[in-house]
Image 1 (cartoon, rainbow, N blue to C red):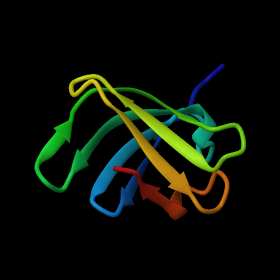
Image 2: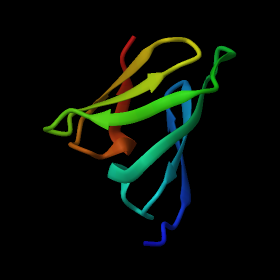
Image 3: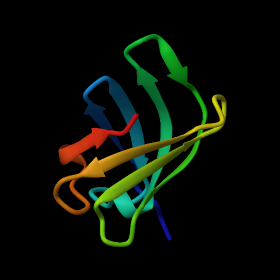
Image 4: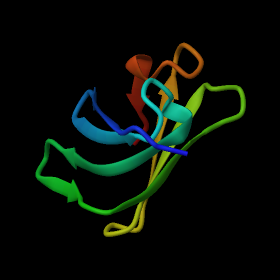
Length: 86
């Protein structure tokens, strides 16, 4: 099976995410490459991205800061409607 890669850059308020999509246009098969907080806090290594089963929350798991970043999605599975939780 050949995997096609496509980059998706997402900006949530003060956070920018780069997600590499293994299958174009399918966030379900994405891998987080990096994300940057505008306050100069950089998360260079991320382990992954997942969604709450109903699609109303997205979680990005970090390594270098040992954090889980949580986002609320006002429209299920629509990452353009994401708001970062503190």
